[in-house]
Amino acid sequence: MGILRRLFGEGEERVAVQARQASRSWTDLITYFDRHVVHAGSHDLEIVGESNYQEALWRVVGGQNSERVRVDVLAVVATEPDNPYDPNAISVWIDGRKVGYFCREDAQAYRAGLIKLYEENRAHVALNGVVTGGGLREDGRLGFLGVWLYCTPADFDVEVVVPPAPWTLRGNIMTGLTEAILTDEADDSYDLSWLSSLPSDNVASIARLRDLLKDDPDPIDRHFMYCELEERLYKSREVFTSALDDYDQACSLHDMEMDGIRESLLAKFGVIPLLDTYRQMAVRQQKAKNWTEALRWSQRGLALYGEDVARPDAVEDLRKRVSAYSAKLAGPVARTTTSSVGRDTAPRAAIETLTCENCGTHWERAVTRGRKPRLCPACRV
Image (tube, rainbow, N blue to C red; front, side, top):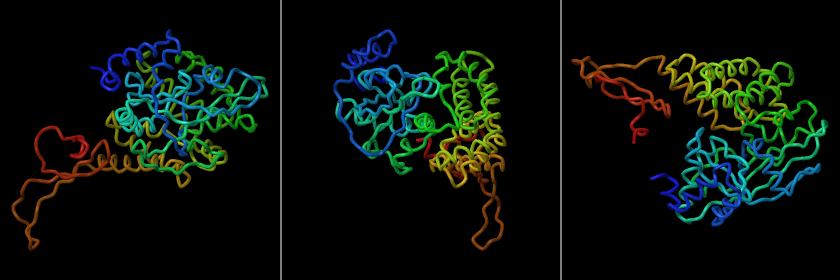
């Protein structure tokens, strides 16, 4: 039995699956999401991926126009267990139209609470929010629209790590892209209009991004181009065989420019937004059991964040990785017991210290034959 059927019932699962197909009309989703409970709050949630849903967003605000807009909205949020890129994905819907997603970290944090709220109320969760942006750029193109939602994290059993950002930095500065898009028109130092020119096809988009990176000199532009290129390459790993190698190369080229990019990000936002390249590359090297490289990427990310990080949880994650990878490189520690008076006794079972690959916790156990556990007792529960 599928998760949608377990949560929503067989009939609603059928409607959900049908409505998610591209050929279905958005009115199916209005019916599907009709039963909802609004959860108010003042904590900002940045929505990502809006650049892929600009047509839907313009419909939400009443159609395209040349003026900057700010429209209060009510958005329904829903899990997408069938999402091919992230099983924790949480999509955002306004007037039955998909307009974006929670970022990967927020989706992981909020998913369990979202399911719990649905089970308690037998109704979908809706959040207040705002669609803002637009206006005309100097080249005559329409500016991008972005989405923010407001919630009370405790409703979802989520502990707030970062306090709400001031109005000028709405979205808690996750990747910084939303803020950069919405202030693009007022800042002549960079131009993100290239986002609107990207093809929807990942392979074609990769080629376009590589061409853009040949000529664009602005550090902020280049940072987000690299971020987009990395994401598209990773999503294409099952489409062409060199995608992951190309992904690694893109991350390395990105890193080579990060010292200059860091200065521009800090000048723009006053803090360093999420630099997911370093966590992702550490994970890539961890899977390959290349502990030296995993350690290097983690340490490099920590150095770039420094004392200016917008998301302390990102630094904490890298610190745990540095500890875990350092322990891996040091190897298991074996020792024998001694008597109560300090004299060596006959060796008992040797003790080894292992490091959890999930949370970085160290624990001890008696040395035994066979494969060593990868997870600590707590993570194996």
